[in-house]
Image 1 (cartoon, rainbow, N blue to C red):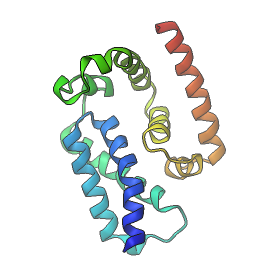
Image 2: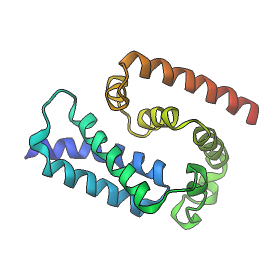
Image 3: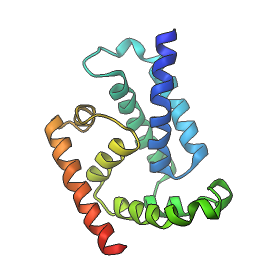
Image 4: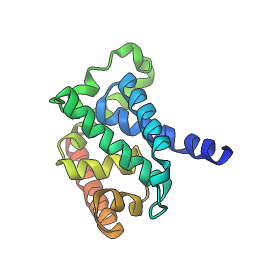
Length: 164
């Protein structure tokens, strides 16, 4: 049980950040995390060890997220959802002065990517998954995930330089 708790402690913050970046809602992110770990515990017998535990859990998370979007008829872009977060849930104005604009611009550029590209960026940044794990999740090679992420990072950096 200690091993399971240790894995939970390592994966939970990454999973929460992933869901928060996808939904823009803290409560929804918490609920989806809970549901993901519940489903993982229910079907731990089907885990065959061909991938890492975190890859398997993120696969469950991706399926639950798709189900959530279908159920709630998700229509808004990532940027619109993040801009709807009340300021009381955010850091103070002083703390956000430097970060807020850059973060919004970055998230805006990420939200403009196609779905597959956005998925790679969010899994790497918020999910902190390895390129091998990302490749497994998207059905591509580790090298594909690595090269695609690198190209997307350069693209976003150029856009950020133009915007700033």
